[in-house]
Length: 312
Figure 1 (spheres, rainbow, N blue to C red):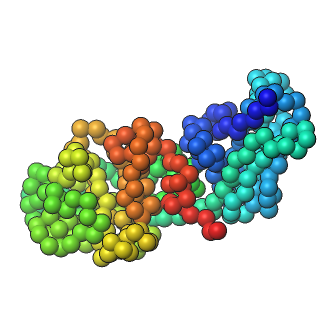
Figure 2: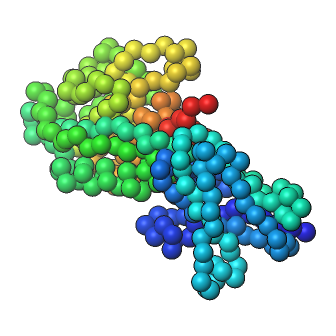
Figure 3: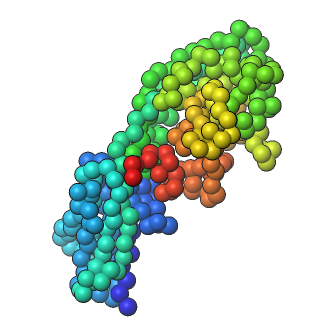
């Protein structure tokens, strides 16, 4: 029985990335290829001696063999190189000696989606303040670009700046945001809403800018009653119907320093995922970026299609 299986590239081709984090989804199967970029796939072949691989639409992406000179890949794996020529979707098909289809994988070539990120280091008049620094924020931005969004969905956050703001009130040892909950739009009603808006009034309102406010501590919990290390919300009014149809601009992020699990860069990546996704979707799985509290970094095809959509 002939068997062909597409598998993600090994570290020798992408030494800086885990194979699962290069835009490959085995549940698809699906592979993201950057526009004017490339990805490598391995074909695990069994039960057939003669086979070929073709791109259904070489205008979108081309496929070519990677020549091997001995070694384990030459004997056990067949390596192909994908080049993304134009944004869009196509497929790779592996065929047997009679042109029968043995395997198929969806290919999506994505243009680079650019967004902006700006940080605010918050303090208050009573001396409460975060100890995060500009170096921290630059390192986090580098991480989410190079380890999460760049290789998986071809998204880049352009770092704008890190500034300091002082709130002319005593906000306390823990800023109380508990009454905000999971509301997509934060009203100015109530003390929590008033303080949230007082902090975020320093933000950039453009939908393309992700504003991150670093504070010392706050009180806010998820639906299960667990303390949040960060949360995103919108400064723009949105109805339930509008949110369901077009999403909501989650470009205001509160991130606290005092947390039991100081995985700040992973937390920031998760919240940036909400910003890109425009809807508070969560998934399950320890490796998944959008699984709450997991510390995972993997994005699947479904998230990729929402966070960096391709036309058609």
